[in-house]
Length: 139
Image 1: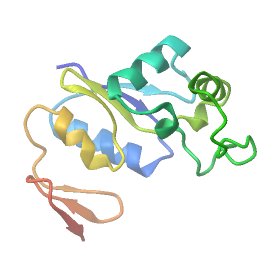
Image 2 (image 1 turned 90 degrees about the horizontal axis):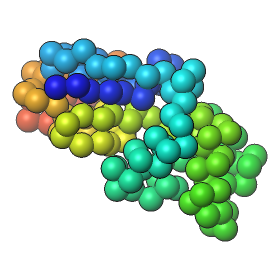
Image 3 (image 1 turned 30 degrees about the horizontal axis):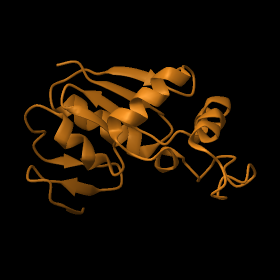
Image 4 (image 1 turned 45 degrees about the horizontal axis):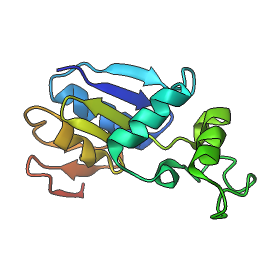
C-alpha cells in the first residue's frame, strides 16, 4: 500500500502522523511541501478528494493569513488557492494520501483510518498516548 504524506518536519502534528504511519509498517513517500509544493492542479485534486471546503485547508498560525486579510469571507475558492500557491505555508498539514482516502490529519490520530492494520500503542511527542482502539490520554 503506497502512502504519501505532505509533511512539514517543523510541525509536531506532522511528525507524529509520519511516525504513526511508520509504526504501522509502511514507509511513506514524504513530500516536504514547503520545499516541493503541490501544483495548483494537485492542490485542487487533494481538496476535492478530502471533501472539505477550501477555507478549511488554510492554516492561520505562523502564516501571513492575518496580514493578507484572509479572515474576510469575500475571497473566492480560486483566490484562496492562489494565496496557498503563492504562500505554501498557508496549506495546513499534514495531508495524507492512501488507498483508503485522503485526509488532513489534524489531530494526528485521523491517520489511523487511512492505514492497514493497527499501530499498537503510540506515544506522541507531547506525551499523549494513542491506544489501539483510538482512545488517548495524557501521559
